[in-house]
Amino acid sequence: MNPFYIFAAPGALILIACCLVFCLKKKHGFGSYFLLGWTLLILLSLPAGIWQSIFGWSGLSAGSPLWNRLITRPLIGWPFNAAGFSIRFIFDMLGKELYGRGGDMLVYLLLMALQTSIIALLFAGRYKRKRTFADWIIISLGILFLLNSLVNVNWYWGVG
Image 1 (tube, rainbow, N blue to C red):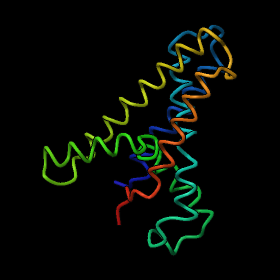
Image 2: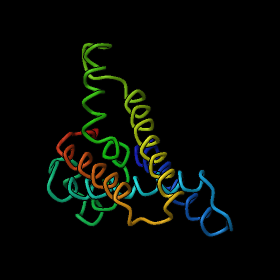
Image 3: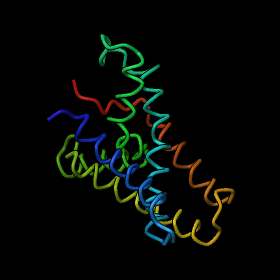
């Protein structure tokens, strides 16, 4: 199966679901803010993919035009970039302990989902109370998440 559909489809579904929830619902509860938190984390993971398209991994899809790489690589790589350095470090340690080599990608994606869900829960709780993005805790969460993602841009998650 094409990796574009495996990785880009869940991100696209979360983005579409968030748009639908906020357009169709009159009252927004904790679940809506949790979904908004996930959406923001997906969007904050895209700059790392854009950096990888422009500056990194010249051998991967070198024949495709830059505009194509600017669209596909961030969408395919959002789970790996959203996990960032923290999950890659844990994954590498678990992989060496459990397998003696790189670990299973399912374990990696589960760790990513756990980390991003915790961050989205923290965002949802704070946003539900404050109802603004101009809150120092929300801004700090976003900056830390973005930095965690950008520190990991040189990790080659691609195949081929």
